[in-house]
Image 1: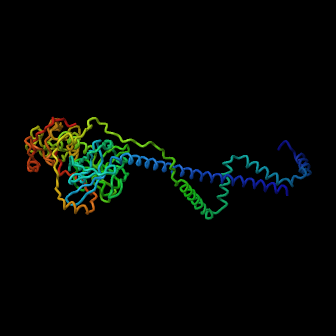
Image 2 (image 1 turned 90 degrees about the vertical axis):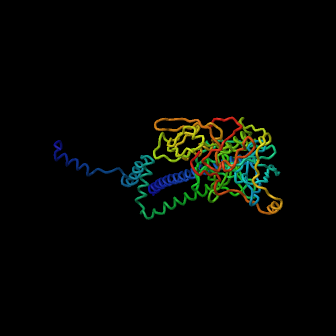
Image 3 (image 1 turned 30 degrees about the vertical axis):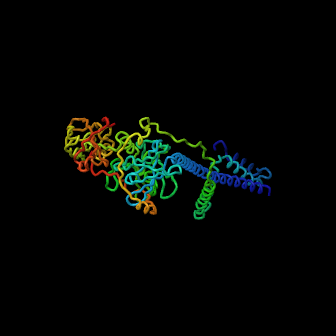
Length: 373
Length: 161
């Protein structure tokens, strides 16, 4: 009997040991799964908390310089958004808000201030207004540093609601939309927008302005923003001349059948009476660069030429046969410029002079010619 | 075999006939056998024992009866995931570091230190539209249009510059 009980106890001992091993393994597996899930959730929670904190910080900082703009256009009162860019009350907004309306008022720090239009530029889609008050300022960033999927924040006034932050990311850099070419590259942003947010600042995660919201896309889940450099170009023109002065040299570009030196931009037409006609540039030359901007396809001309200011010297490099030639051309006023220049005797040029796109407008600049960078 | 003749072999067989195992040998035989078997078994490494047991376990039961095991494991995993989600869904507000309120920055670019561009220069201001008072009174009751177009206004018809 004792031997039987001994053998039974030994076999029980073995089974217990075996069960213990299996149990320990099972608990270990569950613990590993639990810990990995825990660490993943913890990381997600941390990331969300960091993003939320950063957006909140940007919103609190930038919100003080973002204002609601009221105006009156031909049809009805309008409402949009704008933001201060200097401490004397100058603000940027979208052309659709500050371009074709009047009787502006700006809601700032709980008060309403009358505002006046300084400049409005339909080519960039931006406008500058001014109130007479000391104001906070948003720092200006560089849209050139943006890449696809770079996170961005917009602060605006949707409908009749309070100031609202929007968080999204850069979705693309577009030359055209629905078959229409832009005057300069626009930032396509996957960021939800509402009516009333035209003119809102697009900010990078450092809180610097990198663009101005100008339109939404199909279902308001995305929007277009003008790069801040385009608005800054208009501001530079305004400081120099009191208005936007887009330049041009009078060249039509088309796509070449074969790339030459990496460029497919071929001079299709040199317009009579334009700076290009007197520069020596010929039809059939392949355009390589305008200023410092390299050109590889006809679309590149839009960005390269947008930043030319009338009166500035523009170095244009072309390929003619096997020769690389550089011409220095003084740009004239772009025919599409909305504000016509005033002649020295005080009279304004006839609209017909600008309407004929194939002729440059004779220009009298009161500022010394500069070299396009 | 040559060393032993038939007589010697028959002597040995006679001796063997009277040979007896020690007392209790047969009673202890089974116990001793099991003990030695256990000793042999326990001399193997642990992983080997587990593997053998697992093999034995696998062949002892039909596969059909084991079909419920993956389901049981999956149920355990799902339960673990749900528990972990419930535990970590609670926000940990204390983990967000408090910072001093950021100060507004001023423009750093010396090129743009505009004292007051609108005040120091006389610009050609072109009011685009004139509104009379009656129209404004009418518009005061009109709800405002909140601006955000569906297409950017910027437009370039051709590649000219």
